[in-house]
Length: 417
Image (cartoon, rainbow, N blue to C red; front, side, top):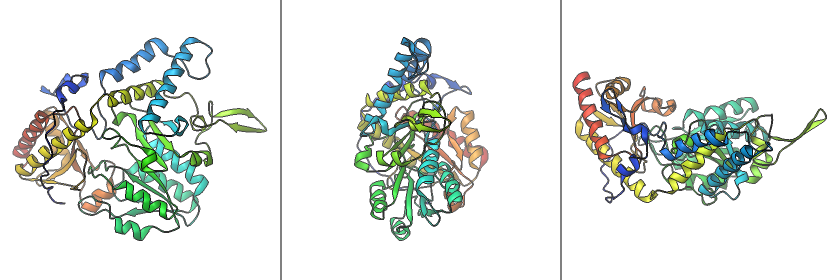
């Protein structure tokens, strides 16, 4: 754990205030102070356009999809499948049939582990995950490995929060069937070298699942260029609704996988002699889906695509740079995870107080941050920490938010040191 060095970046003319005005929740006060929302790695806030898209579905089109013989169902189905098409184009999938609706990133990993793992893992096989993964990219693989006799092993991460590629090379052999890694660490903000990881895994015949929960809101992702075998992400981390996500898979892999759950929609025909399963993607979508969630996710894609993403990325980098420099100057705080390649996530600890105490004092001043191990206990254990304070920035944050955070930390230091 060391303090990150200052990294100059070009100034940006990104109009964060104009974007901020589209988010009604940010206009409120909390505990008598203007809300400073810095918990974007946990969930992003929702623009008016997403809120209205969901509300309009319930106001005008509320119906089940695919099977209703009436206008409401037709309209709902058109919007539902239209959202799938938007997401497919957003990640450059070859076909919308490769976009499976899930409840979020966690269910996406569970689906892949349970279904692909059931079909392809056997005793003696190995699954590699990085040491800084979210629990949802560790536990599902442990569960399927326990059932079939496979092993789950960590890819080492250094003290800066960088995956050790030499160690990965040493781990890779023909017994490795899956490498499952996050594109970005939710706990540290590290951007992983996924192009290299994917190439190395494929060289030994392993498949790769990429957890894009923390990257999908920041950059354009091209699954064909990445050549990942699976990609998972959540709507709520890209300005969309909760309870909605995506599992993308290469078609030949999805075709080889058994259904994850049984029920309506995922079947072509049912008899007591046997069941014929539906085609992709419906084979993996049993029961009434989250129709409003899909429509909201489509609206979130529209919102993101209406932005200057390069300018937004530069704006977020400015915020991170400013926050890290200011924190270093405060004294009494240490940055945790200092990869030279990061998204706008600042994880830190105080020399004088527990992270939870820092978070409580910040909340009293209307500042929302995350404290704890961020569902990434193995990397916190590696660093010998119970957890960190995590401030994570998005495109609607401003320099004023950074100033408020530093004032809040000064107050925490005054009360607790």
